Image (cartoon, rainbow, N blue to C red; front, side):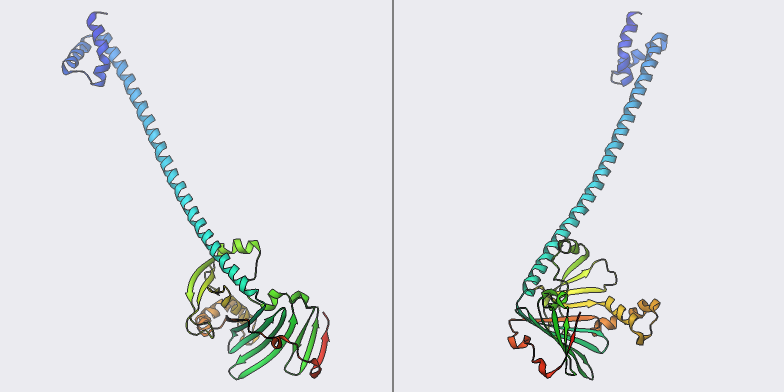
Length: 328
C-alpha cells in the first residue's frame, strides 16, 4: 500500500459523510477511479454506513412509534382517570347532599307531637285522605275518601307504639279491637312517612348512585305546599320518569310523591276498565299527560308540629259501640 492509498483510506469516512472540502473530494474521487483496492474498501465502508443508517432509522422509527403509543396510552388513561374522578366527585356530592336531606328529615320525623295529612289522588275521581295524629307514642288516624258527590268516612284507627292491639272505629257504629298488631305498630309504620325513614348503610351509600337531585319549587295547584322549595329526587335510570319524590328543603320531609307505576298496577288490575294487560303501556301512554296534570298518581303531604292534644289521641268510650274482638 503506497502513501496515497493510506491518505485516501483515512479520508474515505469523511468522503462518505460528505464533510470534507471540495478539493479533498476531488482528490479521493480520482484516486478511487484508479485504485481497485481503495474502491473495494470504499464500497464496503459505504455499504456498512448505509446499513448503520438504515438500522438507526429503524430504531428511530421504532422509538417514535413507541413514544406515540405511550402518548396515546397516557391520553386514554388520563381520560379514564378524569371520567372516574368526575364520577366520584358527583357521587360524593350526591351522597353528602342525600345524607344531609335524610338526616334533616329523620330529625323532624322523630317529633313526639306531629300531625300528618296525606292526600292521594290515584283513583280517578276519588281522593284518599289520611289525617294522622301522633303524641308521645299514642296514635290516631282518620281515613276518608273524597268524591265529587261527597265524603265517605272509612274508619278511624287508635293505637300506640309497640302495642299489640289496634282499635278500628267504623261509621256504622262498630268498634273492632284487632289483636296481634305489634308488628305494624312501630313508630315508623304508624307515621307512614315515605322514603326518608330508612337508616340502613346501603340506603345511604348506594341509593345516591341511582338518584338525580334537583332543586324545584312547588307550583300552583298544591293543596297546601304551594311555593315551597324542594329537592326533587328521581331515578336517573328510569327513562319513563315513573317515580319522583319532592322533599321540603326546610325539613327534608316528603311533600309530594309521584308514582306512575302505581297507576299501571291500578289500571291493569281494575276489572271495570277491561284493559288488555298487553296493551296497558299504550293505554297509559295516552293517559299519562292527563294523569300527571290532573294529579292522578300523586300523593301530597302536610305536616304540623306541636299541635296535637291529648284529646286528639284519646280512645273514645267503647261502650257506645258494638265491639268486636279479632285475634291475630
